[in-house]
Image (cartoon, rainbow, N blue to C red):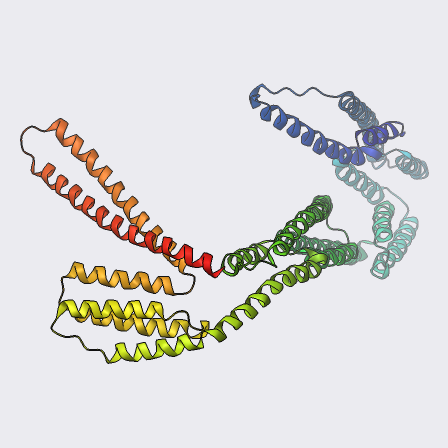
Length: 577
């Protein structure tokens, strides 16, 4: 980019007039400054990232930077020299024109040799036209002095009445013709041409001599009105141009806002959404091309922002699809690994353990993202392996359930007996009866899976109800019901999982109590080192510690009971296998 800027600046330096390329040079200078600033900030950030301090950072100019600065200085120097020469020339022209005005003023005092005076005036007017331009700051005043000198000469010059009337009449005719030309500018479609002509007509008007006094006020009023009409058209045109540029700027800003919305949507876009957003952006680029230019001050700015946003979108899109392709490979590998694990388990007859393992694989499958075009094929393979196992399990337990019908009849009869059973006054007999009910229930064997929960819930709820009615201590009643609960868990669905969950619950309770005891011990140690004699707070803490230890003992007893049930369960599972 810097080489391109250098080439353009070298071409500009070869142009005969630096003023003609000054604007282009400024544009290139802004582009270079933006480029240099970006490089500077990047180098500075890298310096800081490497451990340097920002205030110690020094950035040396490259040979290209030095070359660009030298070329810009040369062009600016060349322009200053041209401006200086132009200023000198304009100053000389101003002196010459002022001398011409002075000479015309001197002619207006001439009372003899009118013909020579007129001839001299014509020469001075020709010299005025031949003289180059003056400074724009002096032009209006200088031109007004010239016009005034001409008018004074024309009015004061002693011509014969006949010649004076003839000139006045002729001047009137010329100014009237010129007035019609000025009025005709309202029909001129080419604004630049209208601007050029109005300057010529104004100069011609000033150069035409005086008109009859009785015609002058009316003619001057018409002239001013015609000028105002012509200038109002120019003003209206440029106002409309500016309005159009403002409208174009608003339209371009609206397009930029839409692109920003598209970029915001792209932050969470999927592959298909990226394609839809791309179509929207391309449509906005087409819309941008159809919008005219904005004003010079803002046009380059909005164009740079538009281009930067479009580049940002397509860079994000490229990065997204690079990541997608990489992720799809990883996702496919993950799903193929799950399929391999499912295939390794599909022929297992360890129904409970394998069923749980496959359910975990299914949960893991759901957590793995979509695999794109390979998703359906991979899912069909995974589902086939899972279905193979669960269909075999269903057939197995269907056959077992058929053999459990007799056990269901026995348990239905036992359920009727316990529903009809009433407690006696003999506590030992009641306890023995309920214990026998539990033993008979367990001895009755397994029932079909569809009836298991119903009959178990009915039996154990009745058993709890009878224990509640027995006249025993709260602790003994609680222990009876806890044993009933263990039986219910052992005979329920997934007994091993349920008992492990119960054991984990007690372990968590014990850990929490141990945490509190540790806190109490710390507090107790503080009182022992800072107090003398009997401290009521120490006694309170010691009582709390003893109470918590009692709770731990009770929880340990219950956990041991749970573990005993688990140990009894394992042999029966081996027999089932």
